Image 1: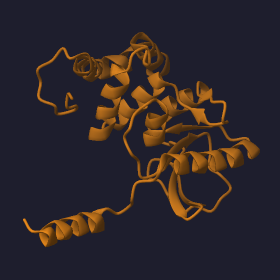
Image 2 (image 1 turned 120 degrees about the vertical axis):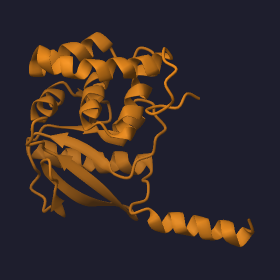
Image 3 (image 1 turned 90 degrees about the vertical axis):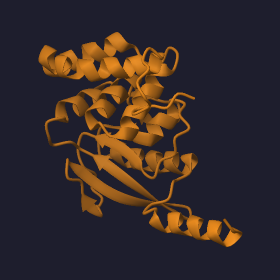
Length: 206
């Protein structure tokens, strides 16, 4: 291909990306600002999503900041989230940062409430869901990138305590809920541990 052909490809891909990736420090600042407001309004909150993955060591980029919370903020949202919560845009310097403020009102509400109660507070004031709860929430989301993220978390040494994942699911939704999750969770553990020859549907070995 010619240089002009490459340029056209790059331009086409750039135009197809609805929302650009955000820098991690920008995402952290957005989370801190939203968290400060939530604290003032006595709202429980914690970081999940791509920013949480970065804080646990992943290099995956993200397009927005995802925060779970006990209730909505007093801010006027851009729109409501279908599964509960609100979407905001926060201006951080010259960057517009999308923030999904997640207040689940569906069948997964119990998981999110439990994850909030056990969130850890970092020295910089950020509140972060534990690795075990991040695995559980991402398993319930079930998207390709969520499954990839779970395998990453499971592969990291001394990060996810797998028996704790089981215990938290049972405490939240009972033995039947864990039985439903068990087969898929076991396969993700096998992928993380390199105990399967299955093609990389959920994860590509490096």
